[in-house]
Image (cartoon, helix red, strand yellow):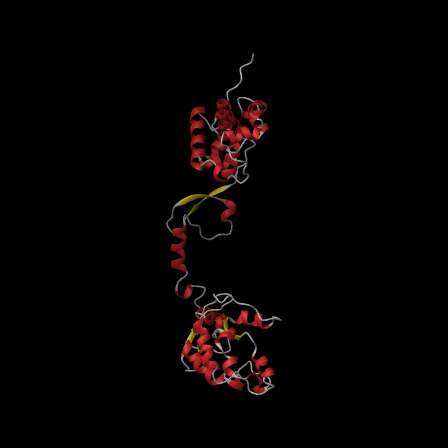
Length: 333
């Protein structure tokens, strides 16, 4: 009578193959690399997958995930096998005598040749018929002078190379400072209210009609030139006048909303840098509706500008909301 193979022996063998392949073995892979066969596993556990589960082998993960063999272990095994053989190991020799298969090396290094190079083998040792190795050249770090081997395709067209991020940052801090920095160019503009001169980057200076040195100057200018009939939103004469309490209520609404857009979160400082103007304050129920209800007479401005009817928005969100056919709902929390 044939002796029944012990489950523990099958589990140990499944784990050995799993470690060798660096991935959960399929039935065909176990037939190739295992001491037993997939049918033996099925007979003992009911299903091959049940045998795999008993060996605590996770489900196949094509991405590698946490099952990936550490890079250091792969390199150590390449060096160990090379010392044992007395020469540069081949893929076949790794399959037959090594702890792993070729796939873990290909997945980690891109190719078998690149893995050998990472393990310390030289180009001459890899220069065998039929072996393709990407061409590398010796480069010198622009900052510290250390040399390194780089793929020729990676440095094509580059005037400077660096051995580390630290050297790259050092070079940038030396080369891109003062007048050499790409954002150094400035255009002189004058504050629309007080007349003080300021320096602005060209993109900002050219995109804005009015410039202000601070919020106080902008607020004073707007109070003088953008109130009542002079306001840009004035349409149809007195029909859209917001009342004598508008500026006070507007300021209160901005303070209540934490000086930021209640739709996208843009802060007052960010808005001023981007658009050169204050945040907008929007009437949830339009001013024209109050005039309509009052039969074109002067409405109750306490109702028009009540804080419950005001919300702070950036210019972009304000434009979008003005186009909506219904009044949007905002989270009051």
